[in-house]
Image 1: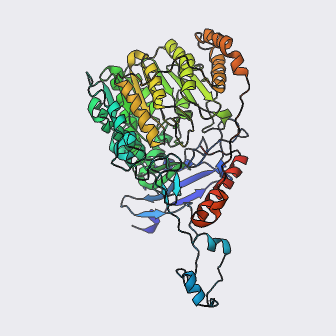
Image 2: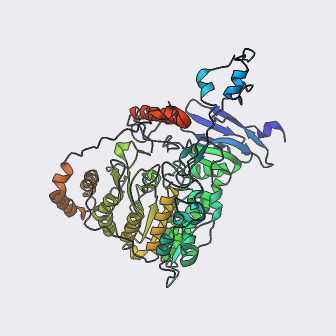
Image 3: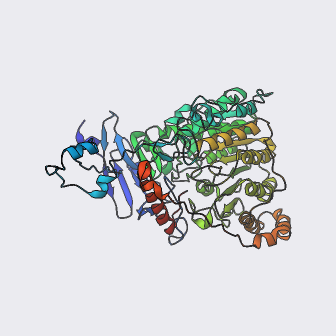
Length: 612
């Protein structure tokens, strides 16, 4: 093949567009022109509402990038014969330094015996700081559970406490966090297997191991949080507990068709995702990757969700759980973003409507607002979208989902946002919002089928969500939703990046689908002050669309009004200080590393860019 046929040329246009040419010779020219998000000073250049609005909070491997960005940056592309060309890629370079090795292994005694004769050594590139620090050997490993980096010879993660050789990928959350791979928490296993049989295999699970092929090819300084291990940990938990395979029945996976995708996505989204199958590595936004198998994984995920929705509505299954990735609720009409390629929940809702459902409810409890799902249905009165998420005045990714975003063009009131004003939100606030907002509106709407966009990144221990919802909390919310639409309920996996949290939470939800009661049920819930304020704000806005909320708002005002108006006393957080005696001895490199990290974190806080 001629060199001209395989070359990849990136031309940057004045309008911020990138032209991707030659990725595959038989693709239409229209598929080769796509927009890419632009970063300014390392931060996301967003166009959510106001370009002069607040800066989004984002963190390590965080969701950043232009909300209007549907572009794709190809790192390595190939043609039909498999020849490859790498071009136009900005990667983290590794700067090499030359050091003299002549006396590297000498002991102190050897140096004295040489009588200090080191004049022959070439010290032209000698730099005191760099010469002193890199010579200390550094052993680092990434925690399999939370992906956080650990230094030195520690065997437990300093963030989540998981054992370095944890068996969480073999046994899921039932693996002991403090012991090596073959150790299982027998108490938890006995509790999980307390019901080993179900009267009918009425709960369907959608899973296909080809979705594990979707992974980030480009090696970076930190593992991407949306990784194949997320599915492996959940599947291992279900298998160890005898739930799936066992008490649930699988459905056959198929790829979603282009015609089905066109019900919720534009050709721009469909073609840009499909184009990635011709590239070894590519990016839609700085944090939304794809490889040559990602398009297949996305089609399988959407196909499983569509077939589950159809089976549940038609009665072939009572309920179901879609164990799928990549996630979908950030994918809008045109653009892939936020780890999401196709919108699985939107495809499922469309499939349910094709099967005969007149009204569909989507409840999204992912810690991030499902801006893609909202965009797709914000003008549709047949689909009610309710989202509970961190918002913090638009500073939390993706910046959308304020309480006053209620729908448009005749769809007002069919978009309900419960935007938490802070992190650390736990079971009490979520259950309180379910009791006073979600269920009252849902009962009045009276859906034919209910779909949960079940991100588990609001779970306790999640490195991105930083909230405090427990498996019992997720189980109780699921139990509350089973009272709708005659129990026709489809749960679709979205986010969640702590393997122990996501696998225990998903297992708790599936056990409710199987008919088990949650381990504990919260009653007479007392919300936090900030949570109560959020609920009151939402009720005041949505009251004009849902009359049933009027009495609820009045009752809460009379019972909790003074409580909500009290000022929240913020506890002063103690600043961690690295022990000064670590400056000498074995931990001097650790002292240097942690001190530098604390300095960078402090600098980051001053810029209002928080780690999530």
